[in-house]
Amino acid sequence: MHAATTDLPALLDAVSALGRAARYDEALALLDATQPADEADRLALLMARAGVVGRRDYTRGVPSGADHPLDAATELARELGTGPTTSWDLAMLHLRRQYADQLVDGIGPAGRDQAVVAAMTVEATRLRDTAPDDGRRGWALMCLGWIADNLRGDRDHAPAHYEQALGLGRAVDDPVLVFEAQRHLGDHAHDDGDHAAALAAWQESATAAARGGHVLGVLAQQVLLAVLARDAGDEAGARALAAETLRWADAVGAARLAAQAADVLAGVDPTQPPPGSQG
Image (cartoon, rainbow, N blue to C red; front, side, top):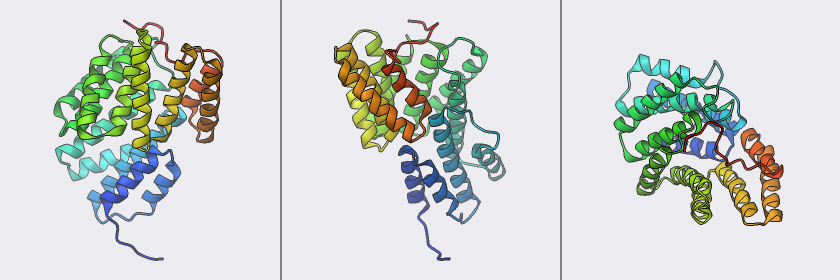
């Protein structure tokens, strides 16, 4: 076996890039092949693994498992002690895991334990207020918007969070944060009947996703652009976009995305607010 010296930050960047490209097995294999130099490195690798597994589970539309690497990372962090940035990152991983688990049964407030959702809102607010930099603050704001939109059904207050996240995403040049913010702002513009604003937001969102190497983000935006094509009377274009997206989503096991593309093909608008939404 050959030994190699590894720049850990560069390796972690590569793992993140593979995760955004939906190459989850390759990302995990790279982590498996890395020997940590000390316990701090082992914690960083466990946190990276938790991020990949979380993204993979969300893509597949399945709940997180009992052997999630985030649990091992949290235990190791407790043993080692961590600085504020690592503690913040761990807390964000926990919040993202909890949010993804909430979405397994769909979006909207119906049938959901709103006490749990309220606690998530408190935690997202804490993360916003204690974020060690603007990029992390932007992601906490995205979480506040997601929770308001998709778990509480509060369509009135979510856009303000997205607007702030968009400004921070642009300021720190985080294309994936810009993708997420514009994706959701475009959704609100579409619901409000402003199709020009929705098109501008969704086109920028797709471009930002591509720039950030977020493969499923690009595909997700194709579903929304198919919706706009149908709104404009281009049924053939809408069906062509949706059919290709469905084929690609199936190829990478993106169950939630495939279902949205199938909805478009069935004549259903997947952008409609869930039952019980406010606003």
